[in-house]
Length: 480
Image 1 (cartoon, rainbow, N blue to C red):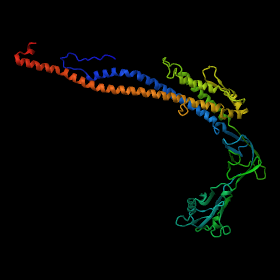
Image 2 (cartoon, rainbow, N blue to C red; image 1 turned 180 degrees about the vertical axis):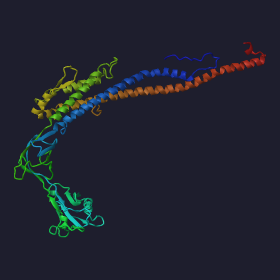
Image 3 (cartoon, rainbow, N blue to C red; image 1 turned 60 degrees about the vertical axis):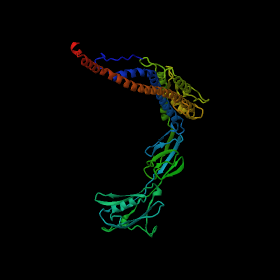
Image 4 (cartoon, rainbow, N blue to C red; image 1 turned 45 degrees about the vertical axis):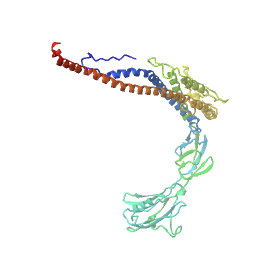
């Protein structure tokens, strides 16, 4: 502990001394006992930061591996193509799709049922009602000119839409200002066929529209079906398949494609056969494996850095710690293991080997990986997804090394141990600070009293002199 001096000049000067500065010097000396504790805290906190950073890298590596070990993950991705994209466009192939080639012949496209009236003046007053049904649904009636419907073609359109009757109504305006009511079924294909009521199919409530301003030459304003609802029809591998929509999801399991045409110029021509090829998405798998290699190397390089010293020659936070060595050994062992008797039984068979620098990092031969995927795809999948093979084994290794406290991860345990030590050190610092605060209060009070005494000495001397002069009649101030 360093010495503390009081500097107050002559005892009779009345200047006293700086209590605050003196107390602060004493407190600083008392706090020196905390330095070893705080140094240890700083070292532990630096270890925590390094461990957490490494834990994040192992978590990233775990996510990379999960993408490859998940049964519905990257390994299951499919890609597809159409031999004639003017006729059939392949939209997607899900993980449920099976690799293979299919022959599709598009016989006819799906159509949505539509209807329209004759063109009348948009301002004409119309009367009556419209009754229709969509597919096998119930008959629905909309009256014109009642309390809620304007007696115009626009009013009728608005009333149909507000009633939500399974069709979309709109007003189509011509260049001459006349307008038509248009109805489009909301249901694709034959199930959405629009049927209007007449005296035969619904004699109790037939459609009876009329133009009250300008008589129309056709009954019911010429309201009629313009396009019938038709299901798409095709043959898939010789089997007839229908679809209510031209977006087909039910023909090939897991595959969605769009029908664009029949591929013929007239109905008498024979539609061409389209080849739809579904294949494993090896490109996505190669990208996922390359990411795994990159993130693995990142973790290894971090560990290698922690085993050395920084640019100033100071040891890195994890230098010489058992946890760094444990993680390094665990990763190196897991990545070099072999499993089973298949030709693809290790990462080496995928073109993943140790780098020439022998620093624990690995390198990927993209051509060898591509060849393995194209020639032994099922074995590559097995390497990552079979129980007891590379994927599950490496995942267990990562669980045992990472921040998963439930799995007893090495990083999790190291952080827990550090936390316990940090608590002890912080408790020591807190107790010392509390003691210092008490001593600081006592010192301040005592030194303030001492300072008051020092500052009062000149006044006391003057009082003594005055008493002396009064008794002796001798003025000591005048005679020195």
